[in-house]
Image 1 (cartoon, rainbow over the protein chains, first blue to last red):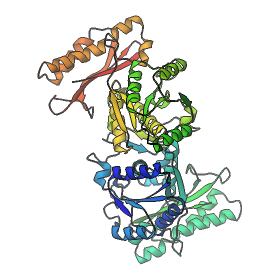
Image 2 (tube, one colour; image 1 turned 45 degrees about the vertical axis):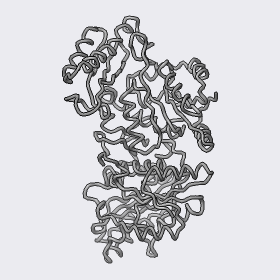
Image 3 (tube, rainbow over the protein chains, first blue to last red; image 1 turned 90 degrees about the vertical axis):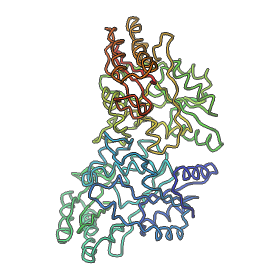
Image 4 (cartoon, rainbow over the protein chains, first blue to last red; image 1 turned 180 degrees about the vertical axis):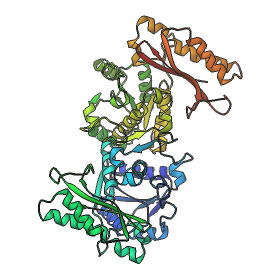
Length: 288
Length: 288
């Protein structure tokens, strides 16, 4: 397993692989790897000739007052896990390398060219975390251009991010296959997240309410024709029982555009939820 | 010479060339080719194994009330010229192919992911043509992703566009060499432009004032240490003599950031000018 920090070296290696006819898979991560990440890497390992895992805690997708500085960075542990999984290259650039001398300001008056997610980046997570989806779209563009994969793997846990990236690749013609992978959960249903380690034992128990609320909506849907209002009410009924959990949004949306739905007729739907559990912000979602 | 309309076919062809070790050059155009374009194509032809010329009048870089509908589209003539120049592929997609079913609205609330030029896209041309540089940055990203060149050729006539694209490629790690090519001029100094055909004979004569104003600034600079105010005044003195020409801006700027300069010390400078000549909008620039 190689460790690369230099974008040019990464691109040259990938271009060489490509010219040999090898299929390159990329798994972009911010490190602090858990079973969710490992499931993506195994998918990539099974389908690709070469697997690149990027580890980069991207400052431009964190807002002011968010946890960029305190985000867990257990590089040695991550590195050992990746070696076990048969990763070929860890691409782990510095912030300085990725953003050069120029500022981290992604804004219309800033010094940088950046990628804007459009309306899909303004709702839900975009509203709760202004600039977040812009930072995601920009860093993913950079990583795709550097690692030059045929396929890139993203978890469904960050569902809105996945949809933004699918749209990015389609609208801008990246010619890369985006492979969505199912959320991996703890035995009690909590979606795996690098931020779960920040939960106190009480918060950790309370946090399962996100998944329980989503399941209530999905079960109601499966039982027959429920209204969106019924599903939302069912979610609320569940999460209202947890005083440690402060829900930011819980909604039933169009599975592609993430627009709020009035009715479950007319295409695939998704239930999405975001909440603060103490100082920790968690998100989850379920197919309806 | 091949004519391709399909992005997938274009990308596949280019990827095949790349895997054979061939160097691919791209010359993005909106058609209505003139000697300026042909000079780019000759540069590409001399330095690359395969030359792709794209012809696409990109709607998202035109503002409301601008000349998208009336922009000259002499495809047969362009095609004949490109054949003579030894172009390997014309990539000429439809608007429908490039922008799919989704809207042409590149805005924070729109349905598309797009590329934003930042502050460099807000000044000068960006101020005169809101959204123009966003449209340019977006379509160039699409074309680079489709044609997958090693090198792409742009004229210095559209100087701000060139700087936006250089920054785009650098900030987003496209790994493509941007080759700037000198402005080609008519014998009387007018910069070649597809829009020159729209000028009446009187306007055509008056239009040379752009280049004459720029030359006045450059000459003054060469004569010794002039102030920026002197250079700007020299330009004004020249263009004020032409009642048919309405100047929108004439400025001395940092050659890389296009920030207005207070002094000529401290790095390369450029004089830039934009004007309306009747219904036609023209731009030009000169190295100082």
